Length: 54
Image 1 (cartoon, rainbow, N blue to C red):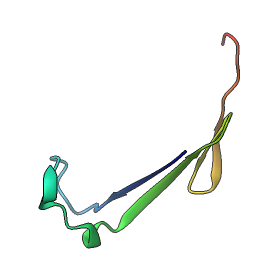
Image 2 (image 1 turned 45 degrees about the horizontal axis):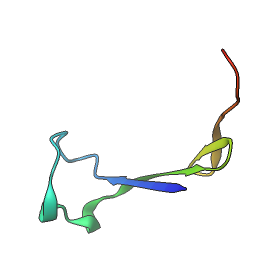
Image 3 (image 1 turned 120 degrees about the horizontal axis):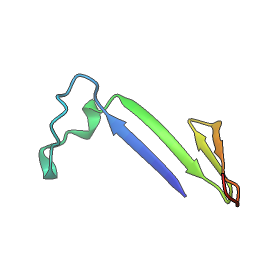
């Protein structure tokens, strides 16, 4: 599974709902890929999931 988040750091932190978002001005992105036991952010390994108690 892959999740791509896009945002504009110049926008306020208030959520914008519906068609009020102009996609072309979303200049920053973060891609998160989920494999069976690994989580990658922007192509770099971020976490390894393991079974068991911590």
